Image (cartoon, rainbow, N blue to C red; front, side, top):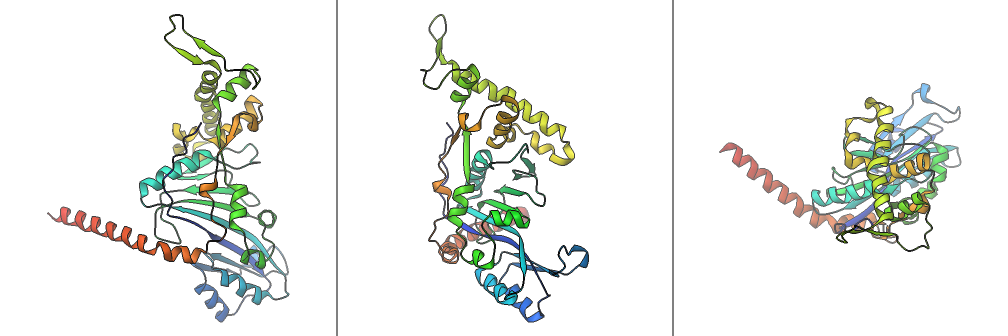
Length: 338
């Protein structure tokens, strides 16, 4: 079983990272300036070549929008038609140090799975993991832990569910601006933050054709000095050799330009998402028979928490961490001058 001894979390911050909405007309400069104040960044797209519906002439890309921005957009549109075709839902798991963020990030990257992912391999770009193709009309999960949170200046593991396309947005539970205002982050991540790991004992039993109700098959050496469970040993041999070789060959067949040399790292080949792919394509086993669902309660955002209030609570810790970083920088500069 996987060891789930995780670092202590100082904050679980759910928010919308990116929202894209098509509206009928281009808003005036006063409304655009108001929207810019309510977002981290705002892009107004009016290129005729990118219009995909005759009645929708303008696209607004909101990065890091606050809740009042959705109310303002609802007032702007009124009874007119609009279409929300991109929603990126984010969860930042904040910790105290970059080392703790790296430990937590490795755990999430190794155990987080995207159900109904087809035959797609996970891929890495530098230190960022993608669980599916990052293309239009497909939902994807993005994970990284080497950057600070976009909401508070703290080390974190960043988990982002990207819904690209109006159909994917509707599946995420967003059909109107009211849905954005009353979005249930806890319920959203409870269904999608699925953590799994392989049960080597169950895999060995399945491979040998032995039923679960039978007792463990224990084998000892002739001199009685070494005793082991044959089912567990068979499962671990399958994982270490056949599974890793298959995933490595599959990623190499897709080309290094597409996947990058970083994916050949042995630690990145031994992950739950790709193990599920081997079970489905090669072994012919159902993942539910040999995969164990891990408890995700400690990573879920609290349903009654307000992100703004949590940011204010974390501000003293943020300032103390920043002061430590400043002192270390000054010390390094002094050593260089000497």
